[in-house]
Image (cartoon, rainbow, N blue to C red; front, side, top):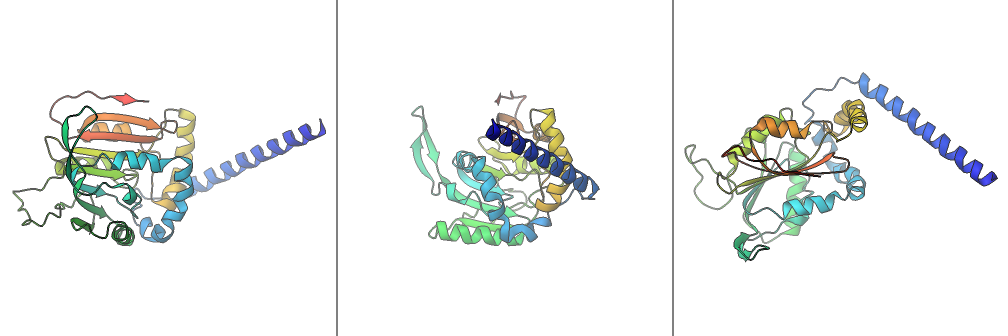
Length: 278
């Protein structure tokens, strides 16, 4: 009984400590004046970014989610908000003929990959990772710039297109990027313009609001502090952003109490049907 009592006391004390710490964090967070545009944080956090997020991603098994998404990429691929290249390990490079699960013929693999990020420090880290992992792959390009404005071209070795010949990508990929851009709706619309109209896909893995109000309250309370430190507004309503973009939703899946969103989109051709799988 004595041991049981001591255990209950210890647990109660620890819960009290967590609650007190949370209240203090909320007070500090609310006192901050943080702009909507926090992209400049990434140049400062780039050298330590991988170490800071590694444990959290392992606990949430985000590596598995990244791999599932990246291996859907086909043809000429554009990855925006590439960061330090946390998706590098999962690329299937080199286009080839194959069959899908039903036995139907299809093209597999990536013909080319273009990486874009606003942070030059992160782009350089991503470049070094790629060169180490895929030293013989030539059709790759790295570009520093605002993904909501630039018009990159697939590195195919062909003559660069004119403005009347806007380049298209077969796959546009972004992981954890809508949280960091000041205008996520405009970004998605621009990505839709870069996606091949007939068969192209936009693949997203994002974090945002939950299914549950109590968890959203926590995200809201701590959002300014998180954005100020990590350059990420983790409480955005991803579903609303996607709806306002006007793109057609192929599929939505959500994990981690609804805070992790996997979204597959395509340029809109008709009304389309939204399928959300919990």
